[in-house]
Image (cartoon, rainbow, N blue to C red):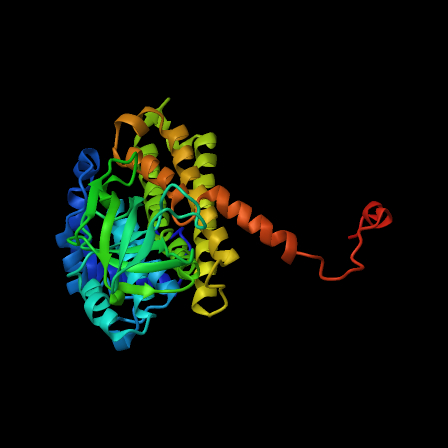
Length: 402
């Protein structure tokens, strides 16, 4: 199929050139052992993030005054898409994305001590950080609790799933306080009472997922980065996460379409390549449509954020984009399964890896069904007719307007 058929704009060409020239060798090194790590459930090595920091990749979306490149959300999403296209290790892009999102949120605290102690090392690749938000509860009934004790605080609770927790030295933890408000604090891996447990999920196995137990962990006052309305802070972070989590899977879906075409072109049945059969061509067409639909939706959402038009707490377009992207990349795999048959199972293991990884995207940054409910709730109050007199009369429908 090649890149000529994909709708590549000048901005997308720039992103490809930038990634290929500056980080092509790094991504090739990450890609080299991806299949073996996925099979063994081993996390992507931390040394690759150290190199990503040293070469400026982790700082790309951060402001220039903090040592970043000031990439806007559109350029950053395009960068992540190219990374996903070139690199088969899903964990690398996922951890890259969450670390940059956390760094941006901490930067917005405006606290110089937080910026120097955490943001700068994160972007330089010398400090790993993970988000500790998810637990077996909704946002209004978190069981992780921060209580006052003496001149400081203690933190107790459990977090179920932390992407990149295996390599993290610091965790951004959301909890309830004694006033039943949500707060956010920074917990170090070597703090007393911190227990990190490695997980073995079905997919996204190289992202170093862990659980986190917090057993009366002492927390100094200066480690509390959000002391009131932590729910709004968490929603802003998750809203940003919905955008960044979608870039790499689109790149991977593009690569899957091209891998499928290559396999079908080289497989001969009844004297002709499988790719020449009309039903196979129809399937490839649907795969192409799915990828381009996902790309168009994601780019629109990213542009909305870049232009300052997005709702930072819960943007409907960003949320819809995450929903569409996840559904469309999973659809690409379903179509690949139909046309590739047995090769999907016993041929290139990348298809199986993506099958598991894309399924895991359903739960990232808000499950698909939760996004549907939230968007539907907004629709009932915000999608009223533009005019009260809007009517669709029986006569008009029967008249057959031209």
